[in-house]
Image (cartoon, rainbow, N blue to C red; front, side):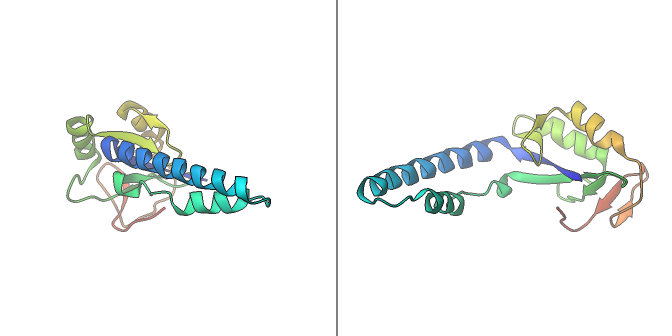
Length: 144
């Protein structure tokens, strides 16, 4: 089992959620009309359309890294923003009005919680491309 962690752009995420709500509202209106005019059950087709029309929030996410039992924490390099955990902390502190820390399930946490629940669990086998002087493993390529 593993969990991924991200910096999420708050404004972009809210914009996408609003758009997805509007899409869902339109789909519901269309299916209400269809259900009134047709006798067959359209529930499954409605679910397919809702899933196909959702806008992904991936563009709002900066991948921090992943925790997996038995392995060291794996961090995603981001040379434009940070190269060490210390630089990552500075990036977050300078930008916390714009970004929030979330896990892949949408749980929002503070930097302190990230340190305790993720960065503080850095024990296990090496994985990734390189290990820094603080013992963190980093990957240069994307992973999930």
